Picture 1 (tube, helix red, strand yellow):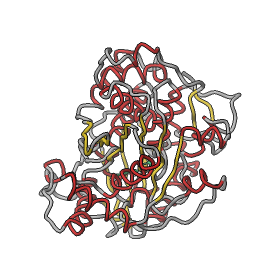
Picture 2 (cartoon, helix red, strand yellow):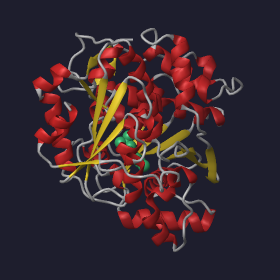
Picture 3 (cartoon, rainbow, N blue to C red):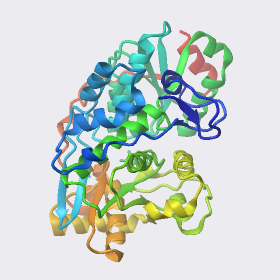
Picture 4 (cartoon, helix red, strand yellow):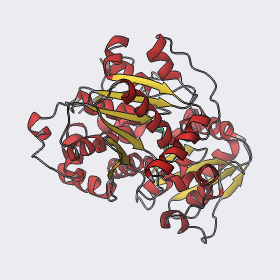
Length: 430
Ligand SMILES: *Cc1c(COP(=O)(O)O)cnc(C)c1O
């Protein structure tokens, strides 16, 4: 499969270029040349195939033959080596638990897949690939774990000193090997600016093959389609499925919509946001107005300019009515989010994290108006990742899962640098 930019469909890039470069030169986003349709027989409830088989069926059209089938098979097995259970929380309301990976967030799926794809593609070029990533916390930990111990890749993570949680810092700084953490004396915007400057610096790019592990990379967003198919398969592909996705940059929802365009039966997707409501607002009014992001308790969704939306817009040929037929959108403030965490715990003995709570609220709002549906909401993080909020709302103590506590006693390995680009450049050229 070849890829082109959302801004034009005449010039194509091979898979390796789309993955290694990450972004096309025209500032659009890479999209597949075409969306593959899957045979109807796969959606036969009696077919009953597992997560890895879905992985192969859904990813094969996009990643072979550039990646040989047997290599792709191994990549999928290594990526999806944790369970993604579907739990019935109340009658006809299911939680798709995407948080059983190494950093307890759904970003593990995309980060692990991309790392393995990039490692394979880089092994065929002579240069060592350096993945540069600026993080305010969660992306850095998923990327660090996803890329850990890949032979052909070095990872350099920039995070703002004193502004990430101790748990997040521990997840990024205790791995060692090919993972290098840079603690920047500055804020997240400084980290992001320094990374951007690195991509624009000609001297640096002549010497090093730099790439980003941002969620806009096709190898990070596409594999997320797989768990939608697998979840619906467990319910026998009902015709009335409604899926609510807690959204920030909209990579996860874009993956779900890709599945739908491939033939997966879904009645409606609900774009559930916190008060950063750019997409729900667009669906309601037709106005796409980007805004500075507002801080909330579901902070991985605090995005004021959701970049993946341009892919959705491209898939639906810029037709708002078409989009509305398959997507609804709702936004919720922190008070409603806290109330949902409390209510679901008290009524159904199920613990939501703030992001899953926003998705739950969006699903319920849609189902209240449209009764008789089969509802799924995506639970994107383990509640313990947002321990302080959840403990305060529920007035109880949470147990820290093993994945989060393993690194606790390992020494922190990090390099403190200033917020001048020259310091990053020196580090990269050292
Ligand atoms: C990143 C993230 C989201 C938002 O996902 P997008 O693909 O950016 O829309 C939701 N929940 C959690 C826990 C996240 O880490």
